[in-house]
Length: 116
Image 1: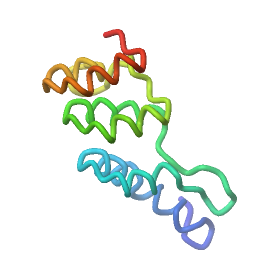
Image 2: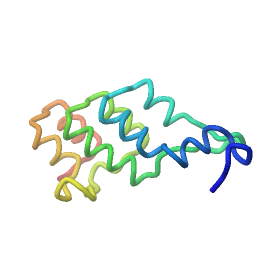
Image 3: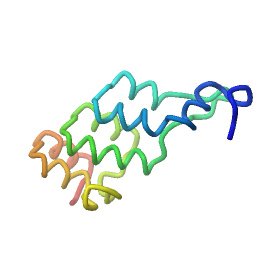
Image 4: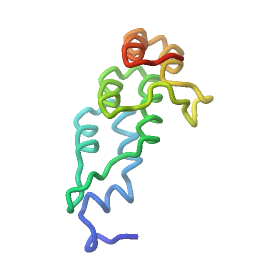
């Protein structure tokens, strides 16, 4: 495990708490935190951020909660709108939005190519 002396602060923070911080930002629709997390770079300039699986997972959660702005931001990150979530009974983002009766989110997902 990298120490703070061996890596930038952000690298260390992401290793320790990144997934939890990302999930929290998405669940609470904290767009400012989400922007920081998705735009972060390590000391060497490389992107230090959520994986595509983590982005997909949070897309389904945001759709379930009806967080339009979070959904839009995650779509900008090329989240797979047709992927099946590992939680929530394996539902897709579109199914999660429909389950919560979030019409605006459903429409946006369809515009982004959601089929199921």
